[in-house]
Image (cartoon, rainbow, N blue to C red):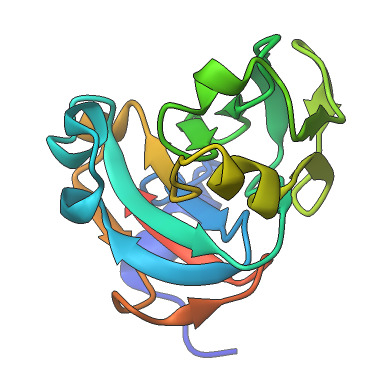
Amino acid sequence: MGKESFGQKLFKMFGMQQADAAPQVELLVPVTGTVVALKDVEDEAFSSEALGKGCAINPTVGEVYAPCDGVISVAPDTKHAVGITADNGAEVLVHVGMNTVELKGKGYEMLVKEDQRIKKGDLLMKFDIEIIKAAGLSVLTPVVVNNADDYTSFEVLPEIGASVTHGEKLIQASK
């Protein structure tokens, strides 16, 4: 290890602990597919960032995995979305498809329930891409941080148009 800074020596000398660096948020890709800019989502609530910042993913696999450790805060009966209150403070929404609430759960299987503790990488839901498309609906899946304004820096890591696989880094933010 390198030499200690003067500040580190002072903290040790007086038995104090240094404050941790600004809280970091790291979210993993919840859905395998292609990254799409949020501004290109055909739903103004998402494209205007009224629901938060993030991106969308055009899924190639009908599975949603936990992007972080936390607790399920929203698991509607229509099974088309899942909300997570992350241990790191982020409020995350994964919304599978546009106007898919109309399907009333058809083509979806929710594997978690509200107030359930989850770990990053846990399988949260399954969905049938073909059933959604056959109903004339988009499968485009926004992944947003509802409280993104609480962070001083916020970055979607993969480039728009990149292919991503669940478990890769998606979003990084800090307070």
